[in-house]
Amino acid sequence: MRTFLILICTVALACVAGGAQEKNKSKKPAPKKSQAQSSHHVAAPGGGPQKSKGPQHVTTAAGQPAGAGGQKAKGKAKGSQQITAQGGQKTGGAAGVQKTKGGGAAVQSSTKTFKAQHFNLSNKPKPEIAAVKFQQNRRIVGSQNWQGKNYWAFRNYRPVWHDRIWWRSHFNRVVFISGGWYYWNAGWWYPAWGYAPSAYYAYDGPIYGYNGLPPDQVIANVQTALQQQGYYQSEVDGLLGPRTRAAVADYQRDHGLYITSAIDQPTLASLGMT
Image 1 (cartoon, one colour):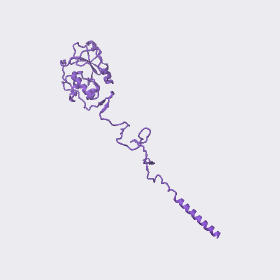
Image 2 (tube, helix red, strand yellow):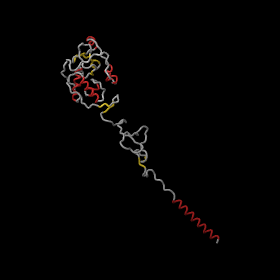
Image 3 (cartoon, one colour):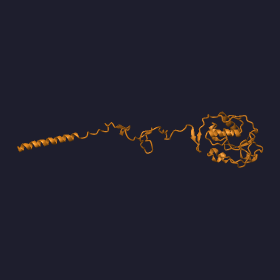
């Protein structure tokens, strides 16, 4: 009887142990899927797997990472994005607008090339335009603020008085126009004070040379160009008098140039004359 009970207990224990093993087997985790089978991984253009979620590297058209040191682009782009042109320079801003050295905005002129004309002008003084008086060593007001090589003639100009022999011996081009004598020096026309005691000058200062023309023809062409753009409404007389100087100043102001109220290279270039 004792032997029979022992056998029954042994069989019962064996059954319980077998059931526990089957239960443990059913709790084992399923094997992980390989990266090739995972739906959460995508193949990168280079052939290797790359995660589709999380931070992504942004590349340029040349295949280089955007940003210094290959930094990662975080988050989604919001609003307008900054567009870069070839060479990495930022684009944008108002078309046709540049900053001058003085900090103002210089509007690029859309004027077409202005063809030089020849005008029949009087060599006599004009009584309605008062003659300027000689002031030795006078400085042009404001010229100290006009920076750059295009304005050196204004910064350095000082009226001097010499007789005609002196002028002829120092300069090989001296012309008579509109009642006064002008000498040519390094691309500019200047009044030759003292060449003739009764000489008449409507303006005392440098006039930028243009297309090999004498100063009165340069002024007349500028007057014509300003007429075409509505800045000058008076007669084309080849004199840089108050009305012409005011028209030049208005044009320079509207185009972001230094207001010299005179004829300089940047103004001629803006008018399409150089």
